[in-house]
Image (cartoon, rainbow, N blue to C red; front, side, top):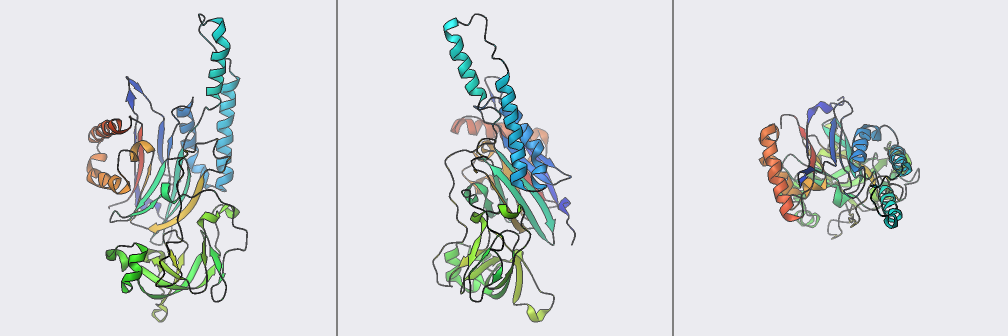
Length: 391
């Protein structure tokens, strides 16, 4: 089936905070219909020209997915640094009545501030729909977030929890191979041939250990991996070790049904081929209490472009989802209004009709700003909601 990304609509909301009669307005959010790229950027409050940085990064977003993400993001960061250098080169103009003894100190302060100019966070996703599945490629830096929910509202991915620390690339030839007697590695782009042992609902004890609710267990296959094929990896050698899964003899794979394709020949119905996904679990045995293969810890430091890119504190990955999944990109001002991703999703669902009406949406945003201000201080509120059409 050819790609048809028009199966999704995008709702883009940007609502600046207003304090003391002044708009903060340092968030940017956009949906590029032609390239099917969504982006949110949050300019750093303490950084001069942060709104300009967020604007530049948002406009650059479609180019992030046209080649190596590392090279593309490096180009964006070098441009932001060039803007910073231009700012530093401009003379500092002080008021004429500034005391002579304070002038050098004030100039030093201004130049120090300019040296931290043009900072922004970024979360950008490219969406491709093909063969009944949705492929998302994601590039992030900082605390702007990406969420994926299935058609029933179950959280599939929270990028703030799933983005691990930077890691070394996987060398060529490390992935792929046969699972009969040796361990091998899987990474984004690889595919696996496996034999279906049963559905997860047939093994309730194992289902309980995985944390998958009983009502969903029938939609997961318990499989024995047989063979793997290394596929084309987005970003080439830049695929990170944090993304890989190691399979050893005796391991079981627990795989969501939507990742698999049923063979046309019914004689081979017990055999499925599926693509690498963060959603699959690797289990040493049916009775093991080991956790899922993918576990990542968050960081207490808020990364920003361009500075943290050069320290490696940014992330990119790709993931396959059921075609009915919903995707939300959000700055911290939006998700900070809620106790967690499930609460955020409930709010979107509850107010879905009003969010498409400008007057009603403005009222909802005022309510969110008021609640946010009472909790931690007001902030710009921005998000992009990618919704399956006719859902």
